[in-house]
Image (cartoon, rainbow, N blue to C red; front, side, top):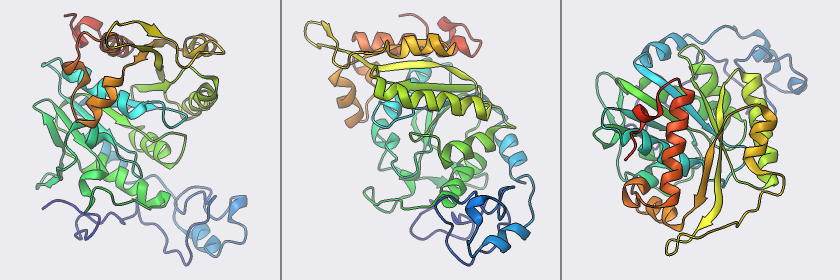
Length: 341
């Protein structure tokens, strides 16, 4: 039986806390540090909260599930976060193409985890939005797109695909933990974790839960405009403060490629030098520039691999080059990650 957000079984209770959390008498306020955090009941934002005394007296300590997560993911060789400071830059689209790129090498087994709890789009892009999660004695089975590419997303648990997920941070964090603790990925060469835009609860949870298991690093996705780069700088600062290595920046929507004549035009002009200059300023690798191609959106709408459908596209060549560069930043040889055609 698949876990459901509508009628969860006792074993699959998505409201289960990350650990033995205190019983609160009122909802968590907007700037709550979290009832299980070290600042619970003591932070400035706790003043006047009905839960202040309860949170302050609650036991603190490391999450007992972290060793379980570490053991579960011990068979995953490389764990990669895909981040963006701003929504709409193509982060989830890039995550799917990165996963397809890794999986196009038949020697690799790849997992793609969607932690965008309120806006899960990965299943649609991967062509598996009508699938559900199967539960075995070992845990939750990911949905397999192909023999060597598996996906996990909250979308698989929704009673209806258009249902909104209206959750506060604690419940979102609890589901992310279940994805890491209970999903039976098996032996993976790469686990790509697609995150929502920004630097919020989901990012903090993934980082804290994976710290012991080891995150190889983050790929930051941006577009050429300064308005996007502003938030990318914040994302890079977040990674540094959280101790996450930045594998590099990808400039998405970098020019437009005409599918007919292959001419490239600048749609979003890099008024301040784009992601390439930002990478130089921040001292981090520039992984490549991926041009706009309307067929990328079409492939995502139909749940197809753009790399397989349009192998001769300049955008496809750029994506394959980025996949190789990511592999090199992981200490692998680019040709071994994705052999040249």
